[in-house]
Amino acid sequence: MSNFEKKFGRYAVSNLSLKLVVLYVLGYVLYFVQPAVFSLLTLDVSAILHGQIWRIVSWLLVPPDAGSNYFFVAIMLYFYYSIGTALERVWGDYKYNVYIFLGIILTVISAFLWTGFMKLSGISGSDLEYVTRLGASFFSTYYINMCIFLAFALTFPEAQVYLFFILPIKVKYLGWIDVGFLVLSMITGNIAERFVIAAALLNVLLLFLRSRNWMSYSPGEVRRRQKFRRSVEEGRKTTTAGGQGTMHRCAICGRTEKDGDMLEFRYCTKCEGGLEYCRDHLFSHVHVKKGEKPHMLPGQPGEDN
Image 1 (cartoon, one colour):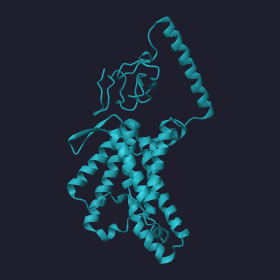
Image 2 (image 1 turned 120 degrees about the vertical axis):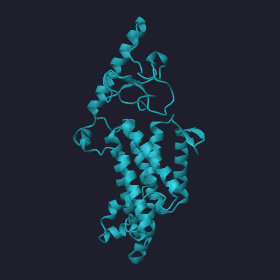
Image 3 (image 1 turned 90 degrees about the horizontal axis):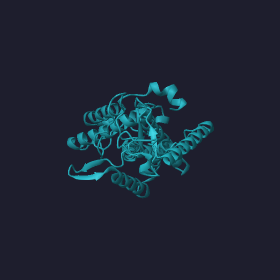
């Protein structure tokens, strides 16, 4: 746990996925009831600079694919809620909050950067206001949601979903399709799309760097971890030479360090009882209290031991 999380983790919003879906529902209702008012919610930077400050946050009410049929809307909202809730359970409220709110902040920054780029390109006055009004529709939660799915694919690569409710396919393959679509959109889309997609992908990149622990260690922490690894390796050599037992065992699959030289094991800080998991199951298990049997999240491949 980082020092920042220790100080501000208690302020994390719980059930954030549900709250985002509620915002979408309100946005859909507003779109169908008062479409004229709906146009005042978009992330139009020129309008913000002219005093409409509420747009900095009101664009969160603008749901993806406003105007779609009700059945598609219901399926989409349920899907976003499902994957978001799964990430919340595994990551915890704090990490999920950081990912979502950082995506929101980066989207707002990208809108301002795009407006500045348009102004540097020679567009100003009423022409700039017209361009930003049109381009504001691209700065929505659409790409944030696509990157929520990318985060889900990074966390649960082996999970299966049923494409068109029939064809089973692993999430990691859909993740690659998602990446391909985003890259293609950056190549073929307009400048506004490129700015907002770059912001969304930057958030995914920062998530990957944090998950790889490349950004969270101080020099002292690095030295402590190196010392710990040396101690583990020395203990492993000792037990292997003596033929006595193992040092690590995954609480889900039961594999030990003897099952493969490339296997890595980590303790889960959210599980009571000092439970240890291999890398394959570190992010796909349900956090348990002391005395409970460890088990995996629903929909994950494999069996509980």
